[in-house]
Length: 490
Image (tube, rainbow, N blue to C red; front, side):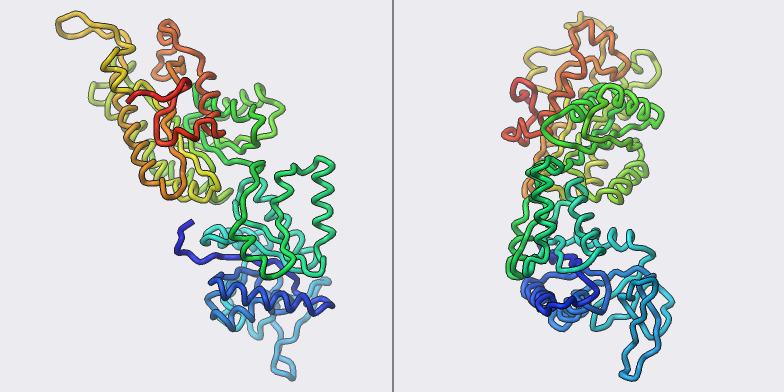
């Protein structure tokens, strides 16, 4: 999150005041704390009860721009003014309207008022999604706070708690437990941990504040559970190292993941999903197919929008997708120039555009990781002992049975791209690596059998290695090209 953005806090609370005035006092006091700390409020858009009290108080202190109400159209009622000059509140279906206006509204906005700016949405689901989006776009300290309330309030806070567990957001969820109002819910969480339905780590997702003055520090100091879902995206994952990386993450016992399996071909991607279900049937993690063509900016943007709308962040991006056209050059299917330009378009330009596009989602992670899969790209090693092309006799043209130069030039360029991203993202706390999985028979360039004959290993070796990088095994080697037995020479 950008440091100069104000925090945005969504408050869930009752549209009634309750019987004990202490709850109205807490709503007012919380508004004063928000004003003192330049916090913007998102709330349910109502004008009565605790909702109306916190909104009205903060508007009086910070102005209407500091408060954004979001309310479903069904909870907005039009009513004539009564003898006191105020709109009367009517109830339908056992639910009192949360917002009453004196005249019909043409659009989706209620004019700025003593309750701030108000947006009307179609349904409750849209209300929660928009509230959450506003919070996730806020600065440090953004999160969700719950005052006293009824069924709707508890449903809202539990959904945001679940979204945190699933890795959809990474901000704090705080229960303001005035006079023990939420003791029963907190006791249920403790019992669920005791009975094994919630992990001990995830039991801390829902934080308790027993006093209004504790709320802001709790939000600022909030730390995500280490047992929450991790959102990882592996590009080029329908076969080879990408597929084996996804499989290794699904088999992991260290964390629960939701993985996006990137594939240019939907047909091949769906076959990969079916194979993964067969190979890892009992995984607690999950995987979805995400279509992606690195040579198509529209495809990259579409993939970004898909992830943004569903989860609004990613924890790890594994740039594995790659292409080699050296075999096609030898077969006469592409020109020498095309062999190079096609490889650069996928392995360097496409990877760079994808990374650039997804950085805003990566920066929303509590522990962002960016991995560039390296290969045959180590100049110092090549200068000392050139591999895999053997020594060639004098004369021209040279006969090369196993050509790799177009591919490896692009992968060498990828190393400096990795270093550049490491430099640019250092202040943001993003861990960046190049990861060299080794000489493996991946199917790249259609040369699987030739690679096997030369001693290439199974792609699962690379998948297990990249899984280790994702899970923190190589955190001391950030900004370098890591290999299984140490660091790769440049």
